[in-house]
Image 1: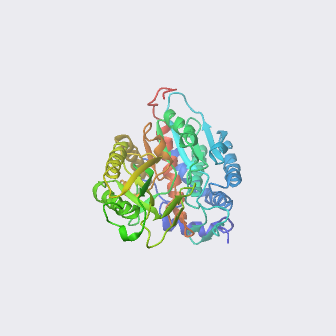
Image 2 (image 1 turned 180 degrees about the horizontal axis):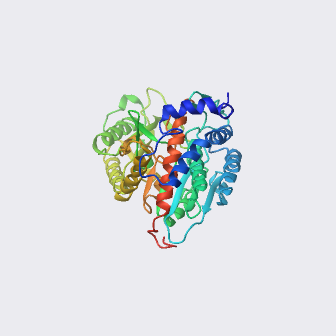
Image 3 (image 1 turned 45 degrees about the horizontal axis):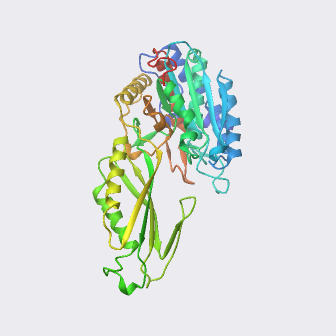
Length: 448
């Protein structure tokens, strides 16, 4: 069954399950425009679910360039119908499709909002997980939450603003990247347009999924970085009967193991983690060009000549990143019997620290929750959230993460969205964007 074909019976049940449903009483003070926005989200539920189904049923794995462009063609008209100007930024030079940038110009001198989402998913065309399905108030499918569900929330909120007349004067820029799940290289090129948008904005709202704890909606004001490292150890090799001798040493694998153990023991600190995701060694070891595979060969009676390990480094501030990298380099530089080691770092996603500005935005969202009769949202522990695109603008603009729907099983064939959370999040977003858009701009026009 398709949700939009049986909206009358299913929507009512979903609203009862999700709270703040059709006919719910708003807590004071709610303006007539806010009441209209809430009513519009409810009235257009079938339309929103139909859009989500269309997006999910179009594969848009990050490396499926044509698929990403097809999702662009689905969502772009939704924005242009609301008065947004659409611009496509091709990114074939980075190995990815590109980014869709949409701009709505409102009243001069008022806050400029940056809305962030992404067109791609982790599921490429060869994945068996390809289609949308609805069962009760749960929807499954590739990207049904991450981030096609987020885009559905975004569009539903903007349509509600238009119906209430609050979109007209709002200054909003939307950046929908085509490679959030697998960013193109070099990153400086792949994220240049997003960074520029962040420098123009007064507030950034990221429409990836809503986090929950014990059934309670949480506010996300921080995300940790995601950087990669590669450890390479080379050593003397020969017959295993000579291992541990002063002339031979311990071999590459022992040295690599001791280095990794030292990193585990000496580097971690609060909000900083290190993972070893790949390791191999032997008489020979070669890292593949994709940096995701290692080929190794050896025998039990040969002291290994080479070992390679790759992992990630996640922190809550640039200072933590630098401190961890310095400690890791110092460990690698120590003397290891019969071996030499080197470590390199690849910067990926920067951190988004829990700044006072981000905390103030969460307070504004909790003001919306009060109006909607919803519980206040406590800040989520950043250890419980992965990296994301908003981190690229975090140094330039205050931001909130998690304006998309609640879900489980993201990045797996079990990806499932809680349908009532789509309506709850769309109402929150519509009221929050309306209130922020009516405040005076913080940054002068053209500030970098």
